[in-house]
Length: 260
Image 1 (tube, one colour):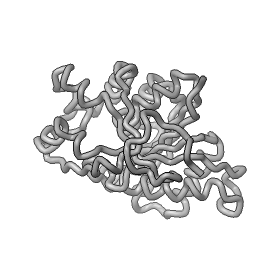
Image 2: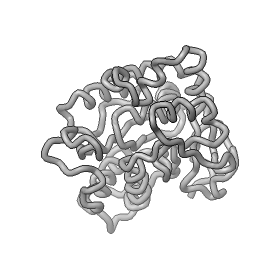
Image 3: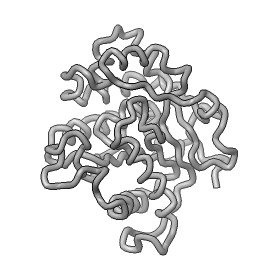
Image 4: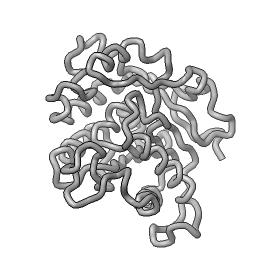
């Protein structure tokens, strides 16, 4: 039986593979519909082409790009505002249109920290997705964005304190911060080892990031295979819309049970 349909909403090309590549491959492999919305980079850029290769590997179809500029790379979307500077209502409305068109049962995005490094685009994508999740189901909001659709569950990809013992020093070595959450806030810890080869292939599709020094795909590429597999084999999520409050490791896969 297929798992619930899943829409990932992330800030940059490669976030989908790093944070939820295993879960996306898991859902797609079960026969579920999966897709990814990426907030930054324009369609005619090399990062968009790499994203298309990655989502194809994961079974997530064609990329859905909002097309805003990366906070630190203005040329990522020539002539467009940076994501964090774009009108909030505009960004929410565009994401609502994707949610209503794709009609997912589950939405996954960044956590409130903006993942381990606290990137401004990650944090803003978290805010926008949280607002769009609710707005998508309200017929009085964004009436031009399609028929209302309310997803049943909203999860945030995250890292618990106990899950960064290997990764933390690697990030610190390239000058990045390490922001993790208390273990009790993790609602779901997914063992993605059955889909690890596909996840790694999707990460490698982001070739320009692998070729650099500091991005996480590059850091991973320099690790022994055993260490890399240990770091990448579990994906963690907090439950942002949960009838049970989202505390404790209550599951090993993303479901809609217990959500309003």
